Every structure is written in structure tokens, then in C-alpha cells.
Image: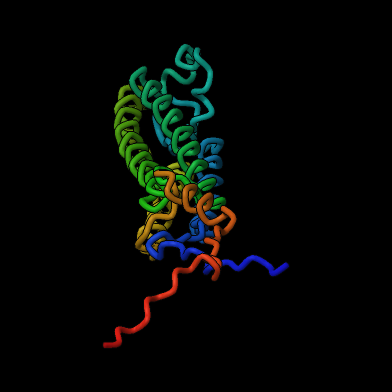
Length: 239
């Protein structure tokens, strides 16, 4: 018994092609982002943010750790150094530093693992988390200048003598925040200047899943018409 003959395999449409999905990792940005997180965490625990000289204040250095407690402003030794408004600004700075750590951590995870989702790709490619971290660092430095003015005015009101001078300077914590902001700018540059493919292979629209399902289907064959059922062509006309 002769084997059945089959025709050619139906060709798949050339317009439907599978684009391989790949994760867009940025190791350089991830390493710098990790340094930013460590710098912000160090600044949060740093006891020296402001250097105080002159006045009746017993504290030579003022740091954020003094204002984690709710009743810090009721300390009589600290109330001579800072005002209630300065205490509120210090707690705002603490919140901003924690927020900067959280945003930098999200950016670090995206740069390390490389998202596939289209929305996460946009966030990572444009370094949204790092840009917000830069803005937070700039805001914190601005608040530090505001606080230094308030502390200086407070020390002026509590001088040791009429001829004594007071002085307030920024210290380690302030410069750590400035350094974290500068590193975040570099992270933004590494993400924004990197070249990416012109097509989007995220597959959020379901096209890639349809392609995979289509290409994984078994090939279909069209049986050829048996020779016995082929109608012979009429003979050539002869007069």
C-alpha cells in the first residue's frame, strides 16, 4: 500500500516574528545605586550634622539622631541650641532621607534584575527613582541651610557674653547628603545615556504570547490530490 503523499507545509507569515525577551540590566548603575543607599543610611546615623561654637549650648555637634524621639524638643539642654521650628525641620529631613533610601532601593532592584514589564522599563530607563533621590538630597541641603540660620539666631540670643561670637557650620552629615545626590546624578546619566533597542519586546499587548502559541502549534499538512482523482487534460484539438 503506497504511503499517502502530502503537499508542502503551509508557510508561516513572515510578518509575525518572535523577538526574544531580554532583561535590561545596568550593573554600573546598580553598583552606584548601592553606594547611594549606603551613603544615605550613613548620613542618617551620623551624629555630626552641624558644628556649633559659642553661646551657652552644651552641644558641640547636632545630629539627626537627637530628634528621633518625640519629646526631644522638651530637653532643656537642647532647647537652648535649637528652636521648635528647627526641630520640625530636622524631622522633615529624617523623613526625606528615609524616602530617598526607599527610592534608591527600588531603582537598585530594577537595575539589578532588569524588568520585563513596559511600565517598569520606562521607570528604569528614565531613572525616575534616582531623579527623585537627587531632588530630595537638594531639598535636604536647602533645609540644612535654613536650620543653620535658625540655630545661629538661637545662639545669638544665648551668648556667654556681649563680646562673644557664635558660629554654625555644616559637618559630615550635610556633605554625605550632598555626595549621595552627586552619585545619584551619575546613576541617572548611566541610565539615560545607555542605548536601548528601538522596539519594545515587553509583550504587554499579548502579541508575543500569541506568537509563541502560534509558532508552537504543530505544522499542518495539506494532502496532495491522488493521481487517480486527477482529471486528465483534454487532448489537443486536431482537425
